[in-house]
Length: 127
Image (cartoon, rainbow, N blue to C red; front, side, top):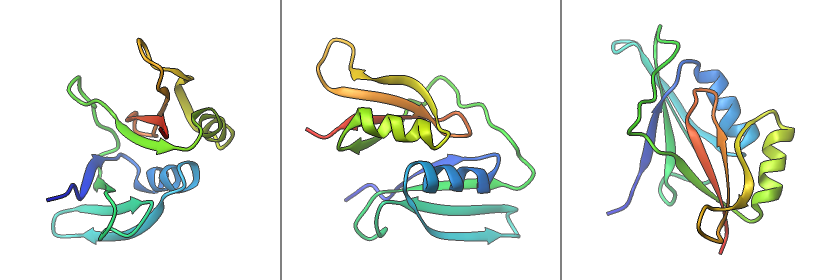
């Protein structure tokens, strides 16, 4: 068994694709409209779906925003240098929720950023 993808609902699919590709450097792997269901799916990631876990963005036609809720946590992305990655996100127009630095009660360097729909993304330094 393996994890295939994590699905996030988005209120503006093109805006979200731009964020994940231009700010986080993912590739748009595939995108498909489902007219009968009035939704569009887009899959993005750092590598081919056969070998990597990816993000599935779901756009339900006509819905422009969602409440994230208190049960959702975050997506985590490993980076070589959290300070550099957070600075690049900021330079590219991304929103920083927590500046890079050691985690609370630990030594792992992390930062938190936010995607256009308000989903938190943790950047974690490679060990």
